[in-house]
Image (cartoon, rainbow over all chains, first blue to last red):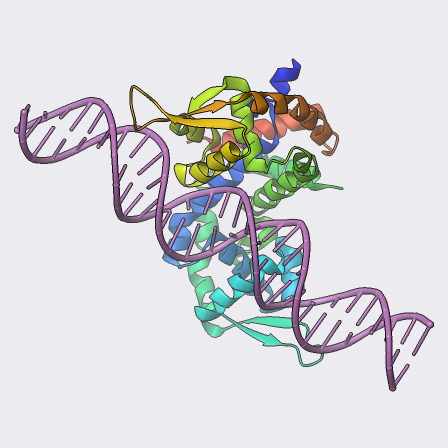
Length: 141
Length: 141
DNA sequence: TAATATTTAATTGAATGCAATTTAATATTA
DNA sequence: TAATATTAAATTGCATTCAATTAAATATTA
């Protein structure tokens, strides 16, 4: 490979990763539109469907997002009536996010999404596991 | 796997992909800061280092970006003196982007980036190829 | 040719995403 | 305790990203 070749898009690992991520998120859109969530709102709700209550810092650790992204996102979810935001009594710095009944109810709609997405993606279960493990390794260190 | 498990982040393929894409782009930042480019500006410049001249539509096809992203991006690259923007004489709808001498000169700095990035990523060449192929397959259809 | 359709960028608007700073609360230390 | 340091969110500012619309130019069709 020449020096020049190294600066070509096709020879970068990052670029296909970047395209794939955007593309897969785009494929979620028709399904997410039906429950009026963006992708980022959806992954935040996924955490809340599992945990019901979490503070902003822990949510950020889980989603790899900071308060600059999460604060407006959570305010928007609150406006939709899906979560409550309340300062902790013990430590006023901490903002505790709790899922509402309406938020919980939304889960019934959302459970259909993963299998619908799976059928959009042309990977065998083995390939999917393989990809998953390679991405995990990529993220190491 | 229970129905509930399917709605957990760890069991989604999309989420690690999304995190990995952001993370790898973040790792580019220290290198890109040195040549005063954002990641998106960098991939646009990569195309121009290879082709010297391209119109917005073709650039968008190559980068999987539309004019909503590219128009401000290219204006910014023009402000930096790295490209020129000029309407085609034959078809005034088409905007032709051409790399400047300053833009070409920047390539000398940029050639070091891919190998520096490679050393940031803990994948063997075989694993990288494997990942590349799986991502390509994921994007099919 | 005149009317219509298509194409290409630009624009608009909403939602990220992140670095950097600020604010307020709590913890630590002198 | 008083001063300082740390922590958690919020805010600010800049750069995407994309859907939808607009505007202008070109192509096609009646």
